[in-house]
Length: 213
View 1 (cartoon, rainbow, N blue to C red):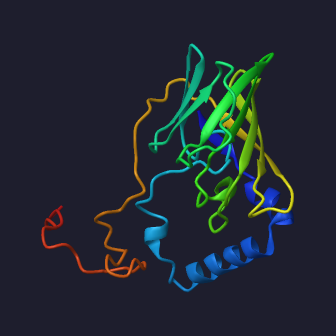
View 2: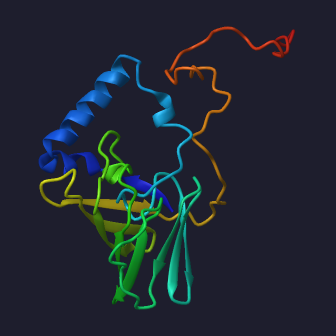
């Protein structure tokens, strides 16, 4: 399934704490000034910050006994346990968090804790979820080819009130899952010493000559 709608920015703006608002402004100013350390964006492990019950791009769901597994082709795997277990009181922060789920009719209700504090809240750059964030998701088929995810993020370090957002995913029946990475180890537009973005017009030495025709 591929994400079709993302309106998390609008959901977050009214409830951002002042520190989070300052972080967003600084992130934008650095980006416009071309001084954003690209290493903070690239070459980082993917983390779940409460966005969409899934991720940008394509995801797949595996339904097995006592668990629903959500796999993003960018490398992050979420395990939604449906065996009736309780959420841990003091979860160890991980990239995917710890999720428990149960069915209410045809709706999968998921609660996630143990998010890494630096994970982007609802995938908005510059807004980390902070400590003790909780995500609640309700996933259901809006129609035969559309998955709807209603997500609520509670992040006391970043938000003054819960942020709510709805995401839509479109089913792609003939799509073959692949893999990709946002780590440009050989990207010449990034200065490896400073982490700042640059653009070098020098052609590589092994570039073949253009065709004669």
